[in-house]
Image: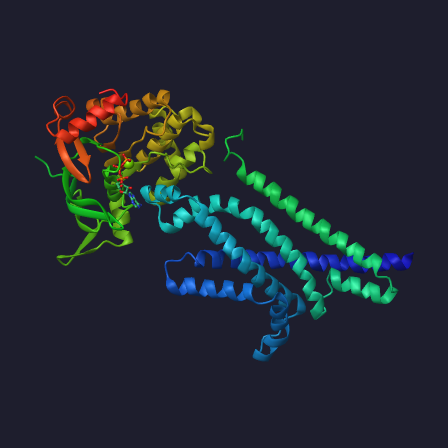
Length: 219
Length: 261
Ligand SMILES: Nc1ncnc2c1ncn2[C@@H]1O[C@H](COP(=O)(O)OP(=O)(O)OP(=O)(O)O)[C@@H](O)[C@H]1O
Ligand SMILES: [Mg+2]
């Protein structure tokens, strides 16, 4: 019995690492999403090209290879990352590329009349973006951002391959030490699921908060 | 005789191969109230949108208050206007749209204060005080905290008018501001226009299908067809004694459609 509680502790440690990775990866992904998403809409060709190259490259190559590259190849050019750093980098850049398209699509979904109202009120390009377009576009992005965050959570499992002690890694440890496959893997299945539920729920309540007043229901 | 505040000189504008405006010229005097009427597709909206810099011209010149709108004078040479020049020129002009174009995520008062705070650097408290005066004038002071989605069409349009006025433009453009409204809501918006007309010295250009209102409101009526001014004159001349056949035909159709003249 005490043995099982020790193993459970291992899995909980793994859960913390997974949560940490998810949070840090999401922050990086969010930053990249806005940089590249806005970059794709830039007036300047060079910025558009750079943003497009980033998005296509990271969507077009596998997260496994990206992670291995960050962890095993970067040291050859003098950049040594810890497994956590490599994991955050690969996950953030990978999911950020998908989310950048969400940012771009959401901005483009805002009607022309909103841009025209900005011009008629003499708001500058960035002022209109910041105060009129983005706040409305954010609401469009949120549900898909929720999906992206869940994708990122699930993708964190790849870091076990560079021996970062996340949920999946710890489950393998427990399996090899106990010989039991069913219990550790069922446990982490449930934990992943619960974490995903928490993300869904969080995003949905955020969405409700932001949508307040927009549809004419009492605020 | 003072100088015209708007001077349009031979402007042309095409959408693809379709020529909407072909060498149009016209002038508007300061404080003048102008009604632009004409059949659908005749280019009325396009003219207002060009004046608001929402649409570029292909050729010709426009002067606002003695300054080129789409050109900059540099060492005696006319260059295409850059964004900074356009921004400076836009300060003189405001526009109200057919579909209001309010910012749905901002309360009524925030809709009105946003641009003055951002573009003129007016402190929030002062901007709100001024916004409340404007909202009071359009009869919307009690809805200052409401969101646009909670308002009727007529109320939205009155907020949109207050929002445009907050920047104190010298020229106001109104593009069929009552066309999207239920009939019973048209009056409240026209009343606001009427107040602006009689209480301010803004130059006003009004595109409308409300011929009765155009008659009472305007100093001068321009009848457009196919991007050209077919006939212009005092409201009485245009509405009672139109000389051109096309004007007569248009007015007949409008009356048949149930509009009051
Ligand atoms: N962005 C655009 N692209 C293509 N064609 C356009 C565009 N904007 C206007 N047009 C065309 O230009 C012509 C003039 O349009 P405009 O909106 O100025 O007419 P209008 O006089 O305001 O008509 P209405 O009374 O129906 O509002 C129309 O034939 C219209 O289809
Ligand atoms: Mg029109």
